Amino acid sequence: MNNEFPTHYLPISQKPIFDDALISNLNTHTVLGGVSAKQIIYAGHQIKYGREALQEKEKAQRLMAEAAKEEIAMEVIETFDQLMLLHEIDTLIIHTEQRLNIEKQRIEMGIKNGLAVPYDRDKIALALLELEEKKLDVAGSRSLLYEKLQYLTHMDAVALMDINYKLAPMDEFDFVASPEKRLELKALSAGQKAQEMLYNKEKGSLMPSVFAFANVNYFNAFGTHLNLKDVPSGVDIGIKADHLSLQPAMTIGVGFKWNLLDGGAQDKKIKKAALEVSMAETKLKDTEEKLTLLISKNKTDLNVANMRIDVASKQIVIAANSLDLATKQYQSGLIDLPERLAAENDYYRANFNYYTNLLNQRKASVSLLVATGELIEKTIGHE
Image (tube, rainbow, N blue to C red; front, side):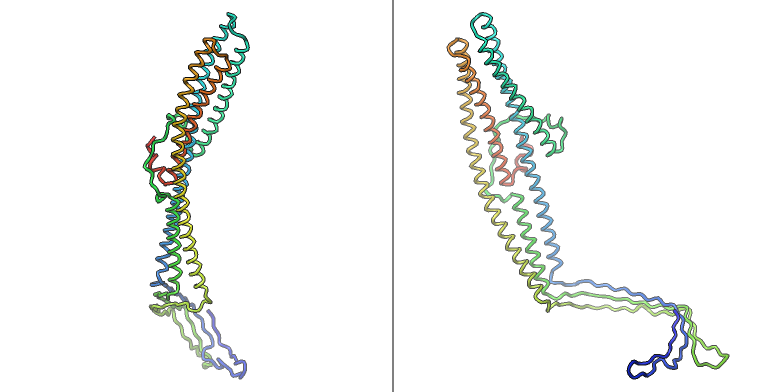
């Protein structure tokens, strides 16, 4: 650093400053440094409430993610049940086809012996073609269901095909009467608590903030050379210093900050936070009421599904007796082929209706478990 001090004048009085200064030339190298630190001691519990609000928000997000998994589990169960329904339809088609082929052989023998006409053979052929059409429909539906399961479970198709079980009514569970275990409800409760913590945080901002502070400053000069002016000719008067330093200057203290005049901005934030708390409480209460109604509806649906299964099972018994009687009557020549085929169709529809009601009963049971938040709890390892 090279400093000279020429004469300067004040702007109004024009009085000289630095006139005839003692120092004519100054050379030095300086290093200046400083460190400051500040630590909040008290801020109206804003940090505490802010941390708790963040924890409750994270909890709500985690619960909502778990609730989404439960919805996926429900879809997986229903898709597997649909596959099992297709297995039952396969069996039903095979048995129907076997009985029709027996009748077809009888008709072929009857035509040879002059006891039957080709018209009956064509009717049987048409019925068998209808079964082939149903096989194609089942195969297409099965392919789509396996693709859906692969998407939902990320399992290999071979592993999915190894999963088989008998389609039967789902056991009656001891369902809770309220949605208290529902994950969505727990998530909303955590969200409400988060809003309450944020409200308390905003209220804490009205209190003064107390903080501790510390400052450390450091000065170091080296290579200093100073020359004086107006000295006798031939005389060199100067001052040199290799190293000049000052001990670190330290400042430690406690201060506070209190925003009293902010144009009402903080008051608006508090009112907004209070409104959000009220909205969260209303949403929680409304959701709880809707879920309670959903549980009642699902219980009713399940009761109806159970009764429909009882009716459908009785229809199968009647249809089976009618088919057996129609088969014997047709073989005895007491009824014609259309009546025999009508009995066959009635038996197929009765069985299909029974398995469809089984599927609906299981779906109603799963829906009720989802409504009460007990799907994972009561189905893992059950079947």
